[in-house]
Image (cartoon, rainbow, N blue to C red; front, side, top):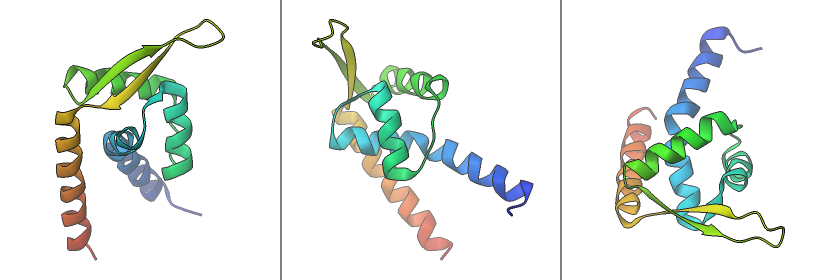
Length: 107
């Protein structure tokens, strides 16, 4: 069983990497919020609550990292699809480089 310190550290690590993980997925394909939650769990094993994800998406949009578009659905309820903006792609590249450098230092 993991100790409290390690559990807390892993939780903080996931929170810190969440913007990187979201940008990574959204660079591959546009997603609506719930779909992104599922992708984060599938790809990275990260469980994210809507109350955590949507403020992050709003912050990334406000910072110019994401764009969005509304898409009508057969059910009649439109969904907001998010994708990475050109500045967001540059940011993602820099984030991946920083993470790679850090990981190489602790090996």
